[in-house]
Every structure is written in C-alpha cells, then in structure tokens.
Image (cartoon, rainbow, N blue to C red; front, side, top):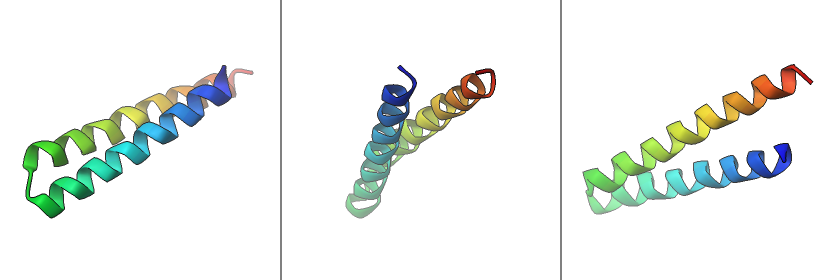
Length: 56
C-alpha cells in the first residue's frame, strides 16, 4: 500500500506542475492556482507517508 501511495503522490505532483506551467503560459490564473494546490496536496500526502515510514 505504501509504494502505491507514493507513486500516486508523485503523479499528483507532476500533474500539478503541468497545470501550473500551462496556466502560466496561457495566463490562466485559476489553472495555475489549481496546479499549485495539487502540488501542495501531494507534498502533504508525501509527508504523511514519511511519518508512516518512520514508525515502521
């Protein structure tokens, strides 16, 4: 379960980076903000995974 979560978090982060870059290029502030939010969510989930790993 842990590896799947880490892969999912990495995919979410990559998706967020693409959204953010697309938003910057197209001058779409909403899309850029969504991308940043996706990245922040992925970072929080990744931090949770690291905490779980520390207790193993």
